[in-house]
Length: 562
Image (cartoon, rainbow, N blue to C red; front, side):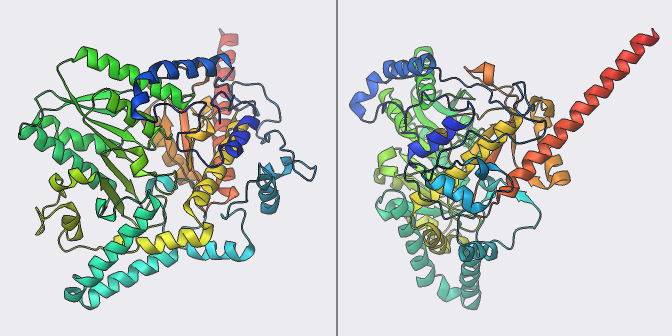
């Protein structure tokens, strides 16, 4: 699809974008494929500039959507009401407007989506048969009732059948731990690694190892970089480059291991809100050019990229960015895919990074906490698990099989988690598309209600969407965002992370909001979860508006007295 879509105006374009993308929203759905082969890398800068110019000249700007008086735009309805997106014409001649009504049936919503360019209704909570719905209710009955959980991205959620499988693995260990340490443990690990390899482009299964979390994967790479400085492979002052949006624990991991060993950290400020993948590619290439000119004698030893950034959350065009790094002489590229598997297509061979890691518990139904790590085969021999145990020096794969006495049951339950996903959706792409479509649908609904906008085009979101919050909610700092998040949890029973964007770089300042919410969608979510969030924000806005009105009345009275 083309990035020139005016993707926020009225919601129609956003919905059309979802349908047109056909589920391929891994950063490649753009007007031209940039730098997909090594020999094309040198042409990327001019092509990116042309694409961005085409976007801007085509009217592709981030304008506030018309809402209901919750922002600065013109009101199209009564204050506090939800103004639905323009109707989607169905094949039967009716329209989909009713499917956006709070009282609309799930069947109506499913019918609305089913007619979009042959789109099949996703097998998730909203569009499933009664028996499937009952299954999901049973599988996630352990969730606290009455809480709108629209933050699956932080911790994920394992269904009951997977938790039961984990419990059986744990019981097997407790029954006879000496026997379990041999064949059951190694066979279980191999089954999990094979299952994951099938989902990430079929690399050699020996290139895929299981870890306790993604941060351990970052520590593996950081340790190797540290030894590169200490052993003289790298020169003092050589650089490690990362995005300012890199996950905090990953940043600190490289600070702890590498800076003390002599590394110089560089940080690229990612624009947000963002208009297109081309904008990311263009500005990142400009940053590489600038730093190469500033530090001609320094080598960039490593670039750290997110496949999906955590906060603000967007899909990065990692294939193109990896290619740019190669073209500019970057030695190694590490992709942090913590949110990726189960959200976007992950093809480790196609991405062509030197290292790739992802959490399995976030979006693939595994119990907490499970991650996988992939490295190119020629690099595996010098990589080590950060926890040194009996197998140190036997290779990373062997080292990860036994990291001392600990609970390995979550890692061993991965095959059951994969099977749960397949039982519901048939394959990974259908599952990813289901969550993506509903997350965008709900993001558009909220943005129209509040008269705000999304932080990026729909194809740059996976199962998490950044929705602008109305200015009246009064978030002017990171601390304000944390306090508001706590209030939403404690007073309104809504769990959603908030992002203060006041310090973000953006080339679209006319549409930039001070704060955004990162909403997630997972199979257990109901429409009511998003309505609860909508109503909570509306209530807070009404409260703030009333407070301002009372203050103004008091000032007027004082002026009269004077």
